[in-house]
Length: 268
Ligand SMILES: Nc1ncnc2c1ncn2[C@@H]1O[C@H](COP(=O)(O)OP(=O)(O)O)[C@@H](O)[C@H]1O
Ligand SMILES: [Mg+2]
Image (tube, rainbow, N blue to C red; front, side, top):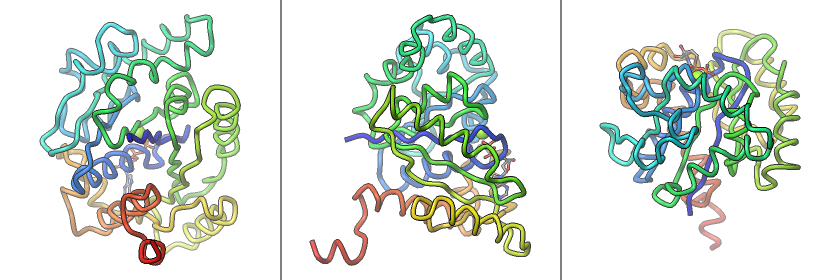
């Protein structure tokens, strides 16, 4: 069975791409077959996996416009088990094309329909979304089983999250009743500041059990990795950031029943 997770937050710079790239890499490293789908015109996830977005001939753009089949656009990466449907800056134009579709359901379900033929080949399909709640993000939420929301431990972190949860509810009620809020992830935590601690407490109070246990610390090594075209967990495996993403991946796998979770596995 394949699982589809969308990584979303309409705020830019909160850690969506860093999270999706590192979780994808850690899942593949653990032996799972992973497809990362980059639907952000900024193409950062594509770059983070060592591809040159500007030199690509085919991308998720062609797939969304049904000019190429997803299977023909999938690229393998230098890491075993990790494939990508890359993005290019041209993707911005796909939104315009999709928005021309008068049927809102057809507009929102395009990604779901074009990915359907490749889902069975993967254990996980992880989607990196753009910093907006527009058509592309709604497409990601419509195909997803769960949404993971990275939140930066900074001033006004909760700002905009009610808008995001409202969008998630709308999608759940209409387009995708199976969508779950898989978890809120605290990122770029700086243990030296009271602000980081306050934000983390506030988010935990608000989302309670739906906040992941692990907190991703601010880590220079994580921010260096993209310029080497490598996921942080491989670029600097011993860094605090890499360890946090390994732990997040274990939390996800355990939640999906793919890792033993102590007591309950003993009882079983
Ligand atoms: N834990 C972290 N520590 C330090 N820098 C980080 C961390 N997570 C992300 N960054 C950096 O912050 C910037 C924004 O992160 P990114 O993942 O691209 O966010 P988004 O996809 O939400 O826009 C990038 O330059 C990234 O390298
Ligand atoms: Mg991004």
